[in-house]
Length: 201
Image 1: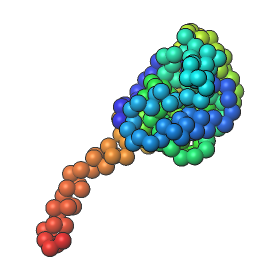
Image 2 (image 1 turned 90 degrees about the vertical axis):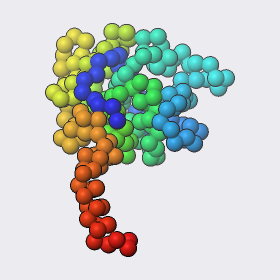
Image 3 (image 1 turned 180 degrees about the vertical axis):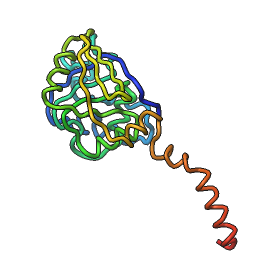
């Protein structure tokens, strides 16, 4: 998993409450187990018209937001069914951070395991960040995970809380497998002792 230390990029505003995982990545894209190639499916029902052409009204299709790295979203982002493809699709598109007041629990946990930083802020702070995000090409936010700060284009700062263990894992690029690999020597030692004690096993 890629480390997350600091991030600076354009923030795209998504003013929709209860964006569920099916909206993030529709079910027809769930056939693959690969984490790549899912960018095309991200918000596909919002990004494209029925004829396959782009919907110019959707935020990620607007020139200023095509290379967004951050999403500022309304309440309850990532609710709905469990699908790890949702953070995979965000990552594949280039979104490394989503900011909202509330997230679906499973989506929230999956983000940390896949290198996407979900940040919870107060309603008041979210409104400030929406003001920043609505500036188009000037909607640049800077996120410092170590300091737990979001800095706006005018220098305003929003602080956020995060679980210390999750913060450590994101800063060091540790997913569940990475955490296990940190204990590889102890695991190998245990297995060697087990083999010696039970050679027939």
